[in-house]
Image 1 (cartoon, rainbow, N blue to C red):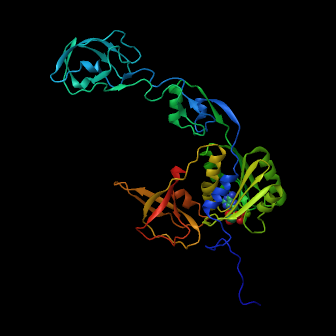
Image 2: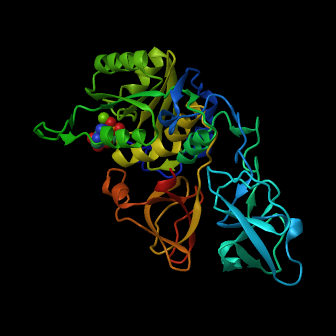
Image 3: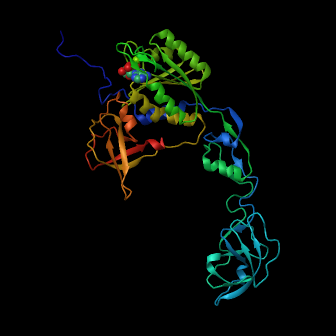
Length: 421
Ligand code: AMP
Ligand code: MG
C-alpha cells in the first residue's frame, strides 16, 4: 500500500493550474457567439426591450416650431426695457396648439402659454411671475431680462435627418417616447433569441410529484426561467431529463432543432452520471473549462449544429452565478445589443469574508446605502453552492478577486448589484 494518495484537482481546491480565468472564459465565449440575423418590423410598443436592427433617422424636427418654455408674455428681445420699467399693451393670447396669428410690434406683448408657438415679431418670453398687471390690456415689465430667454427653438432637440437611435440600441421606455415624438409607428428589430433549457438528474422531481428517497425538487429550471424572462428572450422549457446517455442525446438534438441557445444544468462534473461532455463532443464542438471561480467551476460551452450550448453546473447557486457571469453577456451579444460592460461599485464590508487565494469568488451580499450616500455590504449567511437562499436573500454579488485572501470588517470590496444584471 502507498503511503500517500495523489489527488486530482477537485472543486474543493482553490488553486487548479488547469483552470482558466473568468475573463478568459468570457472572452472565449464572446468570440464564438454568432449574432442573430433575422429581423422583423414591429409596431413601436412591441419594440420595447427589443434590439434595433437599423439606425433611425428623424423625418421631422423636434420641437416642430419655436415655442415658449414658460407661461408668460412674448416680446421682441430688442424691445425689452434696459433701465426703468415700461408699460406694454397685451394684444392677444397664444395657446399650445392655437397660435396667435398677428404680428407683435414695439410696445406690444402677446400673452403666451407653455408650448405655444412664438408669435411673429417676438423671440423672448417673460415669465408671468416677473411682470405686473396694470389693467385688462396692459402690463409693466422691469429690466434684467435677456433677449431669447425661455424659448425652445425648432429643432433644438432633434434636427431633420439626424440619427436619433442607433443600430444595436435596446429600446427602452424613453425610446418609445422619442419614436412617437417623431411620428414613427414601426421599427425594424432583431428577432428574439430562442433559448431552450432542461435539467438533468435522476434525483430531480417536478412540482406536484411526491419526493421519493434521495429525491429533490428541480429548482434550476425555475431560477433559469426567471433569469431568462428578464432578458427578453423566447423561452422553451424542456423539463427534466434522466441521466442516461440516450435521453440526454435526444434532448440535446431536439433542443438544437428549435433553439439558438441550449442551456442545461447538472451532469458536467466528473461523476459517473455526468454525460453532458461526451455527448456534446459527439454531436458538435465542445469546450470544457474549469473556470477559476467559486461557485461554478465546471462550465461547458460548445455548438450543436447552429445552436450555442451552455452546460451549467447542477448546484443551484453555481448555475445562477455562471448564468449571470457568462450566459447573460453572451445573450446580449447574440441579440446584437451594444455591449454592456458589467457595472461594479465599491462598498465597505460589514462582515468578515473568508476566502483563500486561487479563485475569483462571487459571494452573496446585502448592500445598503447610508443617508450620506456611502455603500456598505455584508454577506448573507452560509456561502455553499447548494444554499439557494443565499441568492434569494442577497441583492448583490461581492466579487473577491483571484488573489484575495478575504476581507475584514471596514475593508473596501467590489460589488455587483443584482438590479444592474
Ligand atoms: P451535478 O452537477 O449533476 O453533479 O449536480 C450537483 C448538485 O446539484 C447535486 O447535489 C444535484 O442534486 C444538484 N442539482 C442538480 N440539478 C439540480 C436542479 N435542477 N435543481 C436543484 N438541484 C440540482
Ligand atoms: Mg447530476
